[in-house]
Image (cartoon, rainbow, N blue to C red; front, side, top):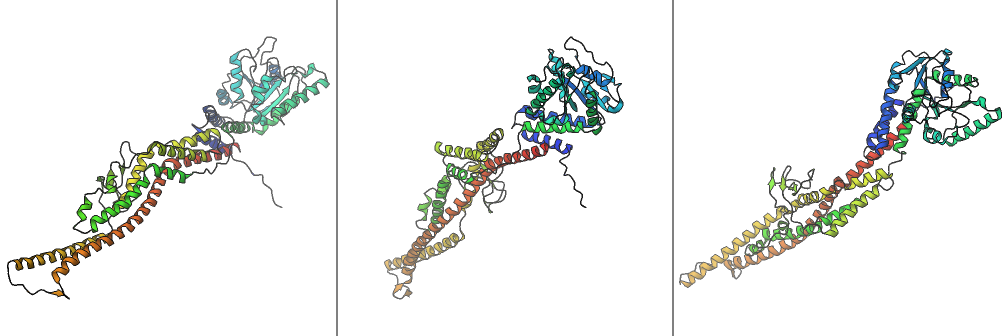
Length: 559
C-alpha cells in the first residue's frame, strides 16, 4: 500500500530570506514604505524565532466597554486588571502567565513590564495572555500601544460587545487589514448575558456576516459572558488547542511575511521585452556618420591605390589631393601603447569626456587618442536616436507594473550620455583597418618602377644617339625589334605599359574600394550595434532580470 505524503511548502527561513531578497531588489523601485515594512517584518520575525517557542502570546483586544479586562480576569482566575465604569480602565498592557518559566526574554521583547501568574486551571500551560488598552481610547498613547502589540503577538482575540461589534473603526482599521492573519485570530462576542437567546443568535449571525465581508471567513466566533461564565469553557478549550499546537507563533510570522510580500506587489511573470535593437543601431549609425565614413573608405581606398600603383610620372599629382579618411582623422590619430599590425574592431570599455580614445585596430594594446572629424549629428539625427532609445524602453516596459516600467525606461536612458564618445570611438576603431594596403599594391608599385626605369633607359639611350649624331660621331650598332630600335621600344613601350598598368590598377582599386566599403559598413553596423547593446540594451536587460528575480523571490515569500 502506497503512503501518500502531503507536499510541504517552503520553510519559514526560506520565506524570510525570499522576502528580504525581494525588498532588496525593490529598493528604489517601489515605495519606501512597502520596502521598509518588508524589512521590518523580516527583522521582527528573525527576533521572534530566537525567543521561546514553547509560549504562545495571546492578546485580548477590543473597544472601550467591551469587557476585555473582565474576560481577562475570568480567564486568569483572579482580579489582575482593574474593572470599573471610568473609561479607559486599561492604560498599559499586562500579562497573565500560565507556567511562565522561560518567557522573560519574550516579554522583555514585547516590553510588557507587568507580569502576573495565573491561578486558573493549568490546562493552558504555555499561554501568555495580554490585556491591551482600548483600541478606540481617547488617549493617543493607548492606541499606539495597541497598534504596536497587534503587530507582535502570536494570537489575537478580539473582544466585542453587542452594542459595538459592527464599529467601523474595528473593521476598517484592524480586522479587514488583518485578513491574512485569520489563522491566528479569534472573535469573542462578550456580555451576551445582557441579551435574550434569540438576540444572541442574531448578533452572532450578523457578526459572522461582517467577518466574512472582511475576508475573515472561518475565524472562530464565540459567545461568552465574563460575568456569568457562559462560553468560557469553550473559549478556554480553544485557547488550549492553540497553545498545545505550539504553532501560532510560526503561523503569525507566515501571515506577516505574506502580508509584507503582498504590499510589495503581486508576482507576475517577467515579460520578454522586445529591444528594437535594429532601429537603435540604424539611428546610431546615421548619427555617427557611418554612411559618410563608408563613402570615405571607398574613396580613400581608390586615392591610396592611385598613389601606390599609379604611373610614377603623374602619381605625385594625386598626392596633392587630401586623403578622404585622413580628412576624417581616421587611421591617422597618434598611436599609444602598442605596435602596428593586428586585428581590428575591439571596443575598449568605458567612456571619456571631451575626447575619444580607441584602439587603432592595428595591434593588440595599440590605442589612438583623439576624436575623429566626422561631422556632429544634426538635431534630426539626435532626435531619432532619442526616439529609438525611448522606443527600446517602452517596448521592454510594456507589460511591467508602473514602478518597474519606470525603472526600465530609466535604465534605457541611464548611459545615453556616453553614446556620443563611445560611437565615435568605435567608428575610429573599426574604420582604421580600412587604411591597410593590399599586398598587390607593392607588387604593382615595383612593376611600375621597373617599367619607368625601362622608359628612362630608352630615353637616355635615344638622347645619347641624338647627341652623337649632333656631334657627327660614328653611330654604334643599334639593336632592333623587327624594324623598331630598342631605345624606341623601351621609351614608348615603357610609357604605354606604365599608363596601362595604372589604368588596370585603378579599375582593380575601384572594385576593391567597393568591397572594402561593404565590409567596413558591416563591421561598423556590428560595432555600433555592440555599443547600443552595451549602453542601452544591457541596462534594460539587467533591469528586466532584476524584476524577474524580484517576482521569483516574491512568489517564494508568498508561498
